[in-house]
Image (cartoon, rainbow, N blue to C red; front, side, top):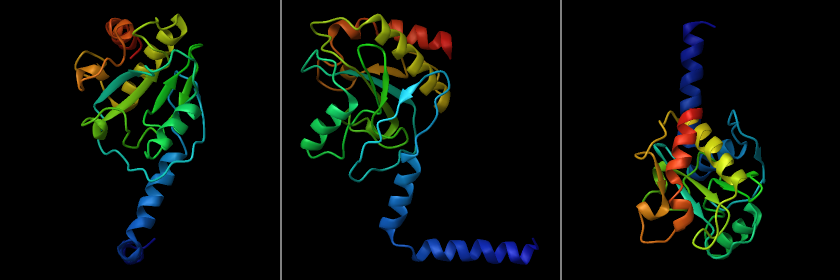
Length: 197
């Protein structure tokens, strides 16, 4: 391709984007994240959830760990999605959910801003480990999956797993989340993720 043709094509593309309605650009960006990303080292069950409007996250430098809290039942990402839609949110606020058997489920698309930790959503990934860890303990399968998932997310974004990059929800907000029993094992998740990094 000649330089003149290349420049004409670039100009045409730029002009087209300039006149494209803003909402169309936003929908294109949203659609790009709905294709899902591969995280080497972990199997993620795709849920193909439908969301209301989402916004892409431009920076990722931390992971925040959560628990369900209001029940110790083995709820799915689809169930949490319905709860969060009922709250008036765009859908499930967490990017990943880890079931009792260790299954990792896709929540909100990984590259979008979550709704899981007030004031910190624009730069973090939210991982929910299913259970009420004020009264129960995470399963061995959940702990193993949490370590592998945190390691994979950290590799993907170039984050070194450590106490300055992996947090419990209570580190930022006035909440019991992720529950005393899981929070006490956060160093175990960090150490395991760092060993797999």
